[in-house]
Structures are given as C-alpha cells and as structure tokens.
Amino acid sequence: MQALFGGLAALGAVLFLIWAFTRMPTRTAAQSLRVTMGVLGCIVGAGLTVRGLAILGVPLIGVSLGLLGAALHGGPKKRRGGSGGRASRSWGSGGMSRAEARDILGVPPDADAATIRKAYRDRMKEAHPDAGGSDEAAARVQDARDVLLGE
Image (cartoon, rainbow, N blue to C red):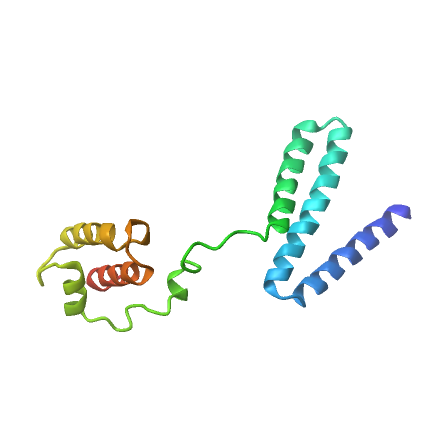
C-alpha cells in the first residue's frame, strides 16, 4: 500500500511539473527543467553510488552537475551575431535571381556544380564573419550558392 501511495505521489509530482512548465515562458521552463533534472540526477546518482553502483552513479552526478551549471550560467550561449539559424535571418535570398547569384560568386552562366562549389568556398573565405566579413555577406554567399545549385 505504501508503494502505491509513493507511486501516486510521484505521478502527481510529474503531472504538476508538466502543468507548471507548460505555463512558463520557454527560457524559464528550460532553466527550470535543467535545475529540476540536475537536482534529481544528483540525488539518484548519490543513491546509486551509496548502494555500490558507482559506475552508474558518478557519471549521472557529473551530467547532473553540468545541467545545474548550465542553469546557473544562463544555459547555452548564443553565437555572436544572433542565433545563427538560416531561418532567423532578416536578410536572405528574397527571390535572388540566378544572374545576381552568379555575380556574387563570380561564376559564368554555364558554370557546373563543382565550379559553383569552389567559387562558394573561395568567396566564403572573404565573406565569413570569422575572416573579417559580416553575417549578411556570408548569408548572401550561401543564398547565391543555394540558388545556383537549386537547394
């Protein structure tokens, strides 16, 4: 009977956490989930270690401490220049023409895929933000490649 009440209490706690997480903003929910999983992982890992299963408990504690550290330091950091996702860019191909794409990459109208890829690599070496270029320039080079290769 005690196991039944314990199971019902655990189920109630899980349902409460699900309900609470669905009403939080995404960032807050992610941080709360990291804290919750970190604390629970440390508790379970310590229990496993004490019971002689240190081979399972110690790595679990390590991962749990990593989750707690991520929660305390704000989670994963955004890359310089935004989220880095292609869908999040405010610029983009926006209907870039094939002629404009060829001008950006500097390839002739009859360029094959290998020539386009080589021109893309060469142009990206200049346009990439890590090489002194900008996010927008790199995005335009990527969009030009995509237009010409039909991706």
